[in-house]
Image (cartoon, rainbow, N blue to C red):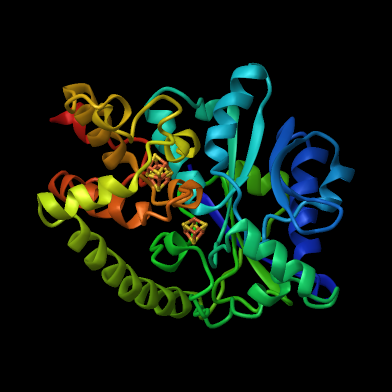
Length: 344
Ligand code: SF4
Ligand code: SF4
Ligand code: SF4
């Protein structure tokens, strides 16, 4: 398979309109039967992944909005099960795409019935913060517009973003059938498209490249790396010895919300039986922990769901780091890469 790189001209500075146009072409040219894509509510305060079959519905699509209510990889599992003959295009952020790759390895997503459409991600706010910003914003400067102002240089003031996004190192797209590049681009004028050659031919994409992208990506990576090291150091402190660990466990009320939203759990995975039942930790708990630590894509949905504000993304990063390092395993890097516990 070859990848074709192309530059898409943006008309009248309407970046979102250009992205919607590309997505409409996928439906109009029958490249997919339906798209799973974030749709804005009429008030524009919420953006929710929704299955869309009609091109006109994409007038409300906003995959650029800096908010993430759930990891849509989990939704794709359900949609594929409910629609076994449908070829679904999934328009996702890098952390969601990486979860899709991991779920494909678990046999829970069929990649031959999915088309993966990825978009660079500058980070997301918690849904409540996003709704507040959307309410306060004028029509001319939505939270999406505000975020798009930063794509050219790469850096963005990270303090209001979700904790997981502040330390996210995987903000550009890999492993997609069609990737839309924003970082390093003047997105009011052009977008970068990278497509599988057969898709590029159907979309009539002409080869072309972008300058300045590598520099902007490197700059953002440096900022995120610094933040990640800080977050992981403070999480490691929380886990450094048994009393510290017990202090963390004491904060957990075993509500189960973190596991309900994790694309890899669905079943009980994060809370040890000890917390659920007051009994000792079971061997099966350790297995579940290790499997999740290996595949965790650092989307931070668990942290978002936690009513006790436990820094779960950083804790997961610390727990998973040794295992991932030992096996040189990067979750979501490649579908060909075997899960560490399948090779051990
Ligand atoms: S974790 Fe990374 S890819 Fe996911 S929403 Fe945050 S910045 Fe985007
Ligand atoms: S453990 Fe948390 S950060 Fe990791 S994949 Fe699951 S929800 Fe995302
Ligand atoms: S969401 Fe927080 S409090 Fe609830 S089980 Fe998970 S870690 Fe514990």
